[in-house]
Amino acid sequence: QVQLVESGGGLVQAGGSLRLSCAASGRTFSRNDMGWFRQAPGKEREFVAGVIWRGSTSYADSVKGRFTVSRDNPKNTIYLQMNSLKPEDTAVYYCAAGALPTIKVATTTREYRYWGQGTQVTVSS
Image (cartoon, rainbow, N blue to C red; front, side, top):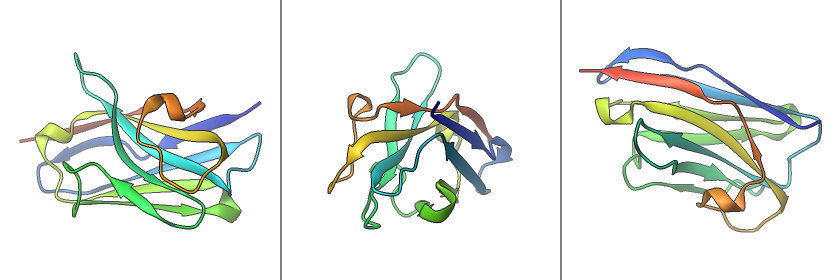
């Protein structure tokens, strides 16, 4: 049984930092696309950042220069370092993994098969 478990969310003041982690179990994702999405109340789930097995990354324009996604394949874990946080970054953050190896970072929810339960990030002004 595949499981993705996020951790590291919490409450932080604007300008602060948080580091999210997502540990995968049940299968290896070393050659699969892995990414982060977020969903604010009343809004659709949106792509934040993703990384493929070669290390290539992609970011939403709203987080470029502030967020960094990385992965540790031996640990089957990905991370999201979030700096210079803004109140508009407040959302539930979800980790996701694709089912097949890929050469390009997927940016839509339909391209990911496995999902974590989400972790709340709240940025106060």
